[in-house]
Length: 387
Image (tube, rainbow, N blue to C red; front, side, top):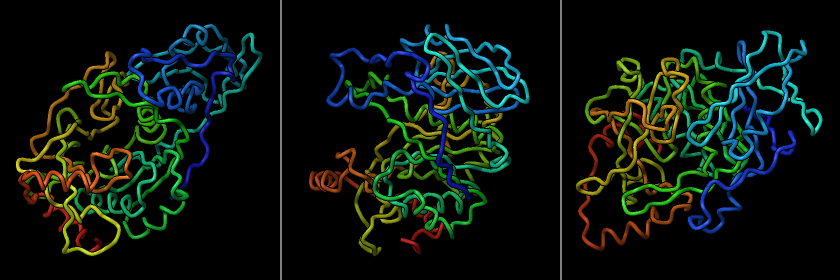
């Protein structure tokens, strides 16, 4: 187990560049938009791989032309190197083709000189493993351990890659204590000290203006090239989400590894915040909640894939994989798997998931039912014993 503390961020001012301009028209900016927007980070990290260095960046936007006008030199050879710049959905990938002995790149321009230090790829650490990956802020360490235990017991997850996004409720080191009995082969925490970015909003049934929340998309890109490229398969879902089959006990990792596209999208089902009073414990936990609406309320998809089988032009998104044009990549819903999204596990950043809002649903006569697939999965995982 290892705690990764230090990435190698680069700021716009380091290379003599301007602040990033806001990417959303002013009339569509919600309260705190400008405060939440990342104006200063040019690159989250610089990853050193075989024959290349990758900068994982938020969108360059107004700085793209100025960035391309800089001169870059690999060290120790001092040879000039030309980067390729590719912009995707809310992040930019910069690739420097370099020699095998290159350990850094030096940027030069009118501002002077700046040394771009690098982080070595650690993909060998997760090679051949079934890995769960998520980003978290202030989620209770008990929830994170339950999330890992559930997917380890029911799906054969072998490793957990956790990005901690500025948690303030505890030191991330505390999480290691809760993971001791989960039985993983590998568990790593990466501190991700960057702004999440302002989210978009719904207009009717349309999700509009999802154009400024760069943090999570950058996290996926960073995880892919720094840790996950050689993983046997990976699963993306949040700490308040659990993936399980609708019937039987098949593993989502086994399913995606044998899928002809090496990729599966799963629809989400809301688990309502109706706590099972048969279970004790002051802290709400996944196994305290087994009820859905009747019929269940659905939510957006999550995914699993074999990363080594994905084209480099495909990028990992929150809900789907996307191609270079930003469109869903081979999106097809799994008929065999869903993920359950728990309203009762919340850090209160979305108030509509509170127990009070759920109580109003019940008082208004909304029909509820227990989910048999979820109960069966909890039983296989021994979650009722831990709750």
